[in-house]
Amino acid sequence: MTTMTETSARFREFKMPDVGEGLTEAEILKWFVQPGDTVTDGQVVCEVETAKAAVELPIPFDGVVHELRFPEGTTVDVGQVIIAVDVAPGSGDVPAASEAVREPVQEPVPQPEPETPKGRQPVLVGYGVSESSTKRRARKGAEVPGPADAAIQAEMNGHGVAAPRSRPLAKPPVRKLAKDLGIDLATVTPTGEGGVITREDVHAAAAPVAAEAPAQPPATPAAPAAAAPVGDAARETRVPVKGVRRAIAQAMVGSAFTAPHVTEFVTVDVTRTMKLVAELKEDKDMAGVRVNPLLIIAKALLVAIKRNPEVNAAWDEAAQEIVQKHYVNLGIAAATPRGLIVPNIKDAHDKTLPQLAEALGELVSTAREGKTSPAAMAGGTVTITNVGVFGVDTGTPILNPGESAILAVGAIKLQPWVHKGKVKPRQVTTLALSFDHRLVDGELGSKVLADVAAVLEQPKRLITWA
Image (cartoon, rainbow, N blue to C red; front, side, top):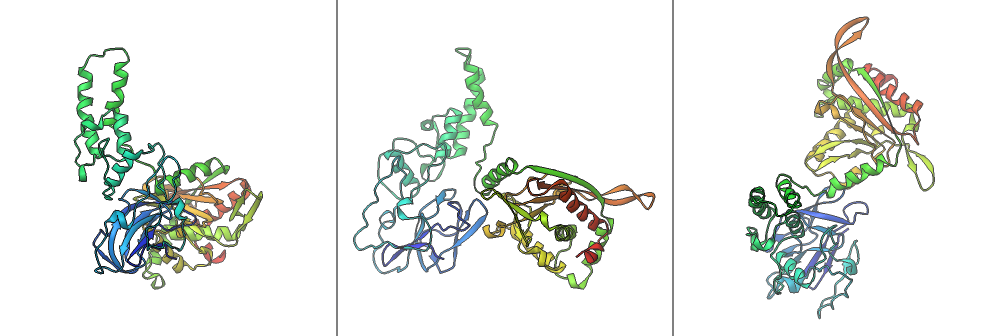
């Protein structure tokens, strides 16, 4: 479904769509086009990051880019216009960008909508919020701009609104940084495009202040304490928590303090599993797919769930009911440049080993490329997190919200092990199963973990138990 409006017979606007399930905002990570570029229907024009994933947005019509409404790094509400396109280039004089489409300016109180210019009939096509709500959302801790600030912001965004400048040009996060460091922006030399002060400019201005502070004798006993934050801040880096990372942080806190977690551990000899992996790599039926221990572990967990179906459930807080699920959407925790995400394999319980291997390969490669869709991360029932790839023996994983269990797999190491009455070097790992104690009692959780361990110790059980 397309999210766009027609501002005239010539100019069309593309709005930020809801690319996930009920998402309300997204951050523009990167523009792939600039004003004057020709675009075609279906061409990707930008990449945005939602609370669930990074997503590429295609333009739904042909034309020439007239204006980009927001710079990279801006968080935009769903339904706000992000780009205007001239769909009939060459048909006459092109109005100034600010006349064709005007970015809404944040005000401290709701303002009436401007009258529609004569001859224009804006029509909302597709989904998104109404025009009356397309107003830039105030970031937490940011100042509410007055008329002078609105003019400055408009100039930074390239709309050319003429107004006297009451302050140096800088974005709100940069202003906050300067305030934290005790730096007067009027004394900072800007290096950004259009005379905009950047974070680097503020840090550069703060460095001499920090160096000079100790040499100045304190006028009062409180003076050294005032100088300390400047020096500390110069040695620190603050990373804004937003998008996927913010959503994960909120979800983990919610899960940890909502679901009563229980974690059980078992150490198991997986020597036979490692031999099976080596054999499968040579099997012609597995040609073209990636075979590794995680594949067998995933299959072992699916077998354990089949033998203990009650573990595959969710808690309905509103109805105070346990919802047992007759399908398994198997989540696989994946480390990406944007943080840890958990896409899942839909209906993993129905897949053969080659199909499961293919699905795992696609899931991992898509995650590493940063192209996992929000839909791919929705609807998980149980999850596997392979902390062993980092050389970690095990851990106590936190449940994904709405899921009943998560299995952590530790590093597989050669260790001394009693095998057939003798101490021998064997491939050994430790498994940890965390589960929601509202859904899964100790007996059920123990059975599931024991079944997984039994399959990994004797992989032939994949045949006899499946």
